[in-house]
Length: 377
Image (cartoon, rainbow, N blue to C red):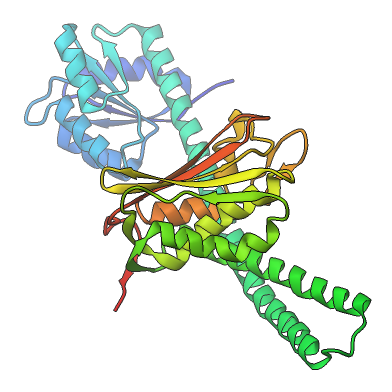
């Protein structure tokens, strides 16, 4: 398949330009010429060639400097540059590579070598353009998806809030008038609506954290006390499972968004409860690190395959074991974004059949650049 494109030849020697024109004229390329470095740089900007054949030895501005300038300009940086030179010393080639050159042509020019290198450079350039176009289309589709999701989720939040409010109102007004079966139905409506509402809120928060649009309300906080407060509402879900919150030996005070970090702990502990068998044990431990605190949530559940350790923190991903699906892909994505917004890190250590240890690290003071910060008053 013929591969042709626009070729810019930059050389102050008219004989060399004529030679290249003769060697390339039957290849179907559109040839453009420049007789100086400055003219070559200008034509690269105006013509946007698919490849540039750039002579090294030119007066006023040599090929190395032209190449550096082209590669420093975002509008021309992706254009392949082939340096054309009679200099064969290693230091000269390294100088060209440092300037950003993509390839070399050695004088005297070999016809087949010239044609093949130009063809390959044009092919690479066209592939890059196709990838760039696909990437831009993907970004547009993602933006459209996120906007639609945001609109739908906002409407769902409003509707679910109404359903929950009416269920709670009915429950209060019909107190002592419902039989056990009707009460159970109403409790299920309330419980499942709360679950859906939590999911919707998590999705909204994930979107805001991804966009860097969730302000952090920073306060000094004892992480041990924060964890205890996060776990207390979950104790009703434990059943026959045990949970042990280890008292730390050293202070665990950090500056953080207390509500956000409490939700992170609640998410991790809730997952541990959900996937730990009856009579299982969950531990929450703390480690003091240099200028940071590490929190670990340990369970003896089914464990997670190693190849899925990174994937489970991605939005809408699911890790699977032989027994069940782990999560719906929002909780851990929220945890990752929330911790990283504080300048911290999060991860998991787990093997199938050996339980899991989810951990996160909070710095004593998050960097100002980590996320939009609203200091508490």
